[in-house]
Image (cartoon, rainbow, N blue to C red):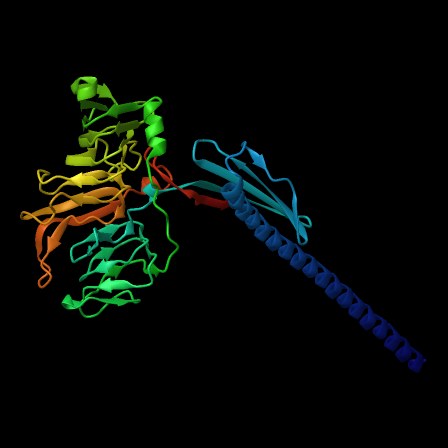
Length: 418
């Protein structure tokens, strides 16, 4: 009987062991299936995210190749790989485009929303097509400070240690260094021990060039259709109350007081424009010829103090923007400045004693880089004109002055995953 009991015990134990093993096997199998399902979902979600990004890229291609077209635009379903995406483009306000891209892979979907705006020149703190003025090299030197995006299609000329706080791009593969009076071209970001520029965000040499516009057509058109369009030499003194005093012989105006036009567009045909004063509101001034900045031009509500300031100024000359010899010591200009035909420069920059610092809060965009002073090549001492303190008005990245010329491309101003 004992043998039978032992045998029975062995049989029962065996069954128990087998049962436990079966439970473990089933448990592991179920876990593996669950993990495989989770991995599959993660993989599908990742693919859906990348497809949604492809939708954003496709929307940019559509803007570049198909716009202007009726908005809103819906791409319809685009099948790609194991999934699909679709995107919509809408324009809630002029020059701003909202894009929503949704992708589906299996049971997973992802949505990305982005905002594009027309790529305009006001987004630059400093831009030139050429870093020369009438065939003469113009140099960045000790004491020069540039804050914001900087780009040239030409070759930078650098002496000493100018400071660049923002991104810097050059269409050339080299920088020309003063090199203690023996200039040389290098593909490096410094020339120790003589020339040590401070590129705080680096420098991109060989960057794609950006073409300069030939005219301020949009501003001219807006001024003649709802703005203020003047013929012949003119002068505007802005007032802190949102008005301006305008002088123009053809209209018989002598310090005629009027409000800034509702559309913010002012243009002078067949004449120069002299500007000065305190700007309250959003306005762009343009001229077929030169614009002369004869005195400080500042904002009533300083955006450096109040980032929500609505005061903005665009200065667009189809020839030059000129600072006259009569301009004050330590001049300040708050504006995005464009000289389409030639340069932003000081008249007779080589004459007279140094005049302190030229502060520009906004940006300088010019065809040829205009000089604003001279320096002693041996000592670096300022001999005439101004030192530079150029700062970027970051509001202009997505909200430029009215009718600012555009590059014909688009930039992304916001991006988020839903």
